[in-house]
Length: 441
Image 1 (cartoon, rainbow, N blue to C red):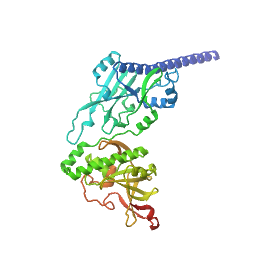
Image 2: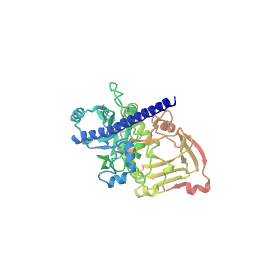
Image 3: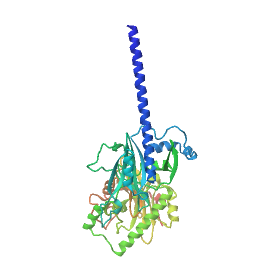
Image 4: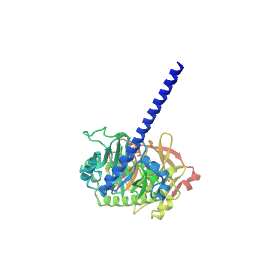
């Protein structure tokens, strides 16, 4: 009986070893298929002179750890397959639209090489405007599939704000939703906005590919890349009810406001300070895709955690003198700078509490303090007056908090102390602090 048990045990061990060996062989074959498909894809695009670059976040994350070694070694850091041999369903590359137009020939060659392909198109938002929603469709994503691996090719377009944009991945009704695991794709859940990357040609796993020169910066951009399009259809409906002010004064103010916003963005970006369109400027973007002509100022928001003492001298150096400074860094800080003529730039600093975010206000003659409460929000990119800027992703809640449910109705008479829907009294500054917290120039 003991002998039989020993034989059974030996048989089970042999079977287990065989299964493990087969598992390893299958895994190794799977690894090879990843690199094999990437190699064939790179050969495909090279034969058509298509300059693509790698944007796969998982691979870039690995590359970033070895970036100094990769930069210093033209033949790659090591002969082992380290980057393109992980068990993944897809690898992601990017394509600049203006660098390539001849897709028909590419598809024919791809099919001869054994690739299946899918093209995702949608409307071109760059052609949308107040007078014409063209509806013209452009390619946003390509997917090339070979065996068990797919290449996701994301198409980037230049926008007038001098940045790159990619569209969402939305399948038409007739498309095969099982073509690849779409939910796992890193790009396409929503549109994204990026700076134009400087590219670096590297050799990894015996493959020559272009990557963003600074992978860590690209990965950081990716984590905050979500883009919101201006709502042109709603803006057109708004102007049908409330015709736009096209008077000379309105046109002149919008021109000055645009110039001021561009200068403010340049100044804050140079300081590395994140900001967003706030108050009336945010309302103008969301409601009518333009500056509100009777607002008479430009409003920006900044989280107090991003405050830098260099902000005031930087704006003064840019030709915008300080008009007033209310509050202090610890409480209700706001700055106002004088732009061209009577157009001013107001910067409100926001403070984060457990369940809400708020900014403060100060009445100079009385020392009264006010607080404006907002639900918590995150930041998205948008394009406004030919500029890439942030707005609250939860824009409707942000606007409604400030302007109430009737935010669609224009209001020309506005009292900052009582008109906002979210304003509340916040005490009075002690008289002995007035010299510090109420500064008017």
